[in-house]
Image 1 (cartoon, one colour):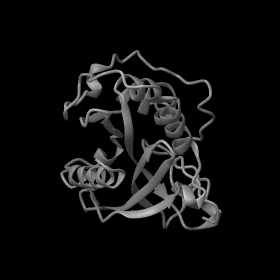
Image 2 (tube, helix red, strand yellow; image 1 turned 90 degrees about the vertical axis):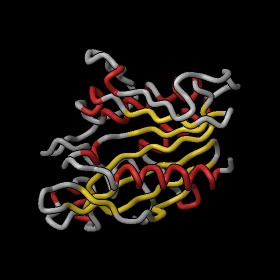
Image 3 (cartoon, one colour; image 1 turned 30 degrees about the horizontal axis):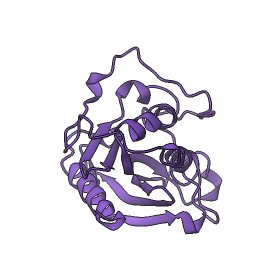
Length: 216
């Protein structure tokens, strides 16, 4: 499977999942999609305990992702999350404060030496259930894409050694977030500081959570 094939699978799967949302905050569920050296797909939701912490998803990417990539022999991954967005420079660091803020579903797709960031608009029905539009390419390595998410994903892929053999779960098997004890939180001391917002959803620092593109 080529990078383009994996990209299409990750975009399609994420959009299909989003269009089955039935609850107002289902867009908060963050998921890692992966392809291993043996052609098996992996789907790993971020354990909810991490999402209770400030910048919890960044802690998870910094602490757990390198082990997942190595132990499951993943060579392509995609990370799905959501964030507030603002096009007003006044609210660049705190888009939640912008009265005209919007929401975006984000998907970071990567292999060693290659990175793409995609986004899709999120709208709310009267019952506050989110609906998702079509994907758009936000930025690539050629655009100088940086930030907390690209950095930790690149580190995990760059540090991976050789194949470990087929692992479980694989072949589209899913590890549920309930498999992680409530008192387990692998805190990466290098994940950095994160400012909270007055809502239950992860804060976005910059145009989109954990992303930075020069000129945006």
